[in-house]
Amino acid sequence: MKERLQKIISASGYASRRAGEELIKAGRVTVNGTVASLGDSADAECDEITVDGIRLSVAEKKTYIMLNKPRGYVTTMKDEQGRRCVAELIKDCGRRVYPVGRLDMYSEGLLIMTDDGDFANKLMHPSGLENKTYHACISGACTDCAIETMRSPMTIDGYRIKPAEVSVLDRNAEGAVLEITIHEGRNRQIRKMCELAGLKLTRLKRVSEASFLLGDLQPGKWRYITETELQEFFKTQAK
Image (cartoon, helix red, strand yellow):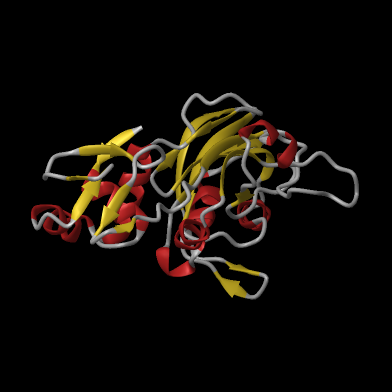
C-alpha cells in the first residue's frame, strides 16, 4: 500500500514526520534509486527507500483487534482447565495477539487485543485513567438509594475506588439496565460494587474503553481497529 514518504520514515522510527519532510526537501531520500520530492508516495514493502544511501528499515506492522467477547469465554490464550478461551475466537487473524486487560468469564463485550506492547501499556496504565463503560442488567428492585450508592466512593478489597458515573437506561418492576462508567479496572469491580449496593447483577457487557466503541460488532466476532480509531486514541493521549 502506497503512503507518503514522510509517514513511512516516521513509522520506521528513523525520524519524526516533520524531520522526514526536511530530509526529503534536502534530497537525502531516494525511492528505487531516484531522488524523492516532497509529496511523493511509496510502498514500504515493495520499494527500496534509502536515507543518505542507507536502506530504510521499516518497522513491522502491528495488529490491533476489537473482539466482542461472549459470556463463557476466559480472557486468556490458553486455559489449563480446558475452558473456552478468547484465542479460539481470533485464531484466523494470522498474528499472535494478546488481550489488553481482562473481562471475567461471565462478562461480555469489548475486548481489545494486540501485539503492540507500548499501545497496551498506554491503554492499561493507571495514570491514563481510561474510562470503561458497561451496560449492567439488574434483576429485581433497583432503588434510587442503590444507584446513589453506586455513584459514591466505595472501598473494595481494601482499596478506595474512584466514584463511578451511573445512569439509568431502563427501569421497571422486574429490574433495570444501568450504564456504568469506571475510571480504573479493579478485579470484578462492577460486580463487587453491585453487591455493596444490594443489587442483583445478571448480565454485564463492556461497550466502550477509552475512545474505542463496541458498536454493532456481534458476539464472538472481531474486526481490525481502524487507523482513524487509533489516531483518535493517540490524540487523546497527547492532551
